[in-house]
Structure formats: structure tokens, C-alpha cells
Length: 121
Picture 1 (cartoon, rainbow, N blue to C red):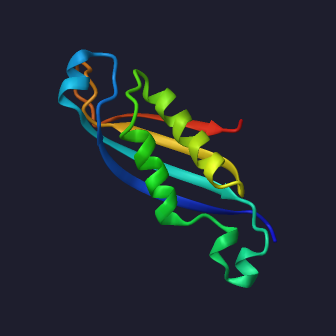
Picture 2: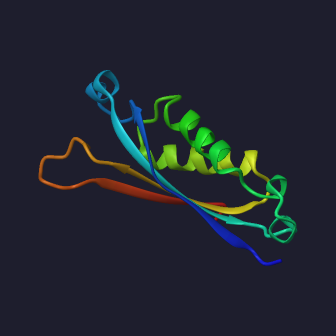
């Protein structure tokens, strides 16, 4: 069986990431997309969840990382999410993690700051 893709889109969490003390004190919402390239194995043919990524468990892995230890850079946060997902689910061949920070402390008008990290490269 060939690889396939699982996408978790716009997962929302309240967390305290950023370089400024105010970001840690006040916190804000972060939005995460996870595009996971998964080894097909036999799970699709056998209709068996044990050989694929359980969406609920993947969401909880993302939540644990995003709401856990403070990171100064959302780039570093995205990498930690990707590594945690790949560690939990050995059938993930590649994790592309995008994190959006809508209330980034930028002097100017914008919708959101967004970074994407791919692991492994």
C-alpha cells in the first residue's frame, strides 16, 4: 500500500509562547495544522486503526506540546510538535506542522504570523 496523508486543520489552543514577558503573562490563542504523511502498511486494506494515526490521540499530542513548556519561537514549537508526533506514531514518515499566532506583537496591521516546519527534512 502506498503512503497517504492525514491532516488536522486549525487545532486551537491557549498558550504562553513568545519572547516578551507580556506574552507569557497574558497568553493567547495559537492555531496548528498538522499534515502527516503516513506509511500505508496494511491498515487501509484491513480497516484497522492500530496501523494508522488515531486522530484523537494525535490531537492530544499536539495539545500537550503547545500548552506545555514555553517556547520563545513558534518555529521551535512547531519542531517539537513534529518530533512528538513522529515519536508517538512510528508510521508517520513526515510531519509538516504550521503554527499561526494571530496576536503577534508586531507594530502594524496583519491577520496572523505563520510558520511551517517539516520533520524530518
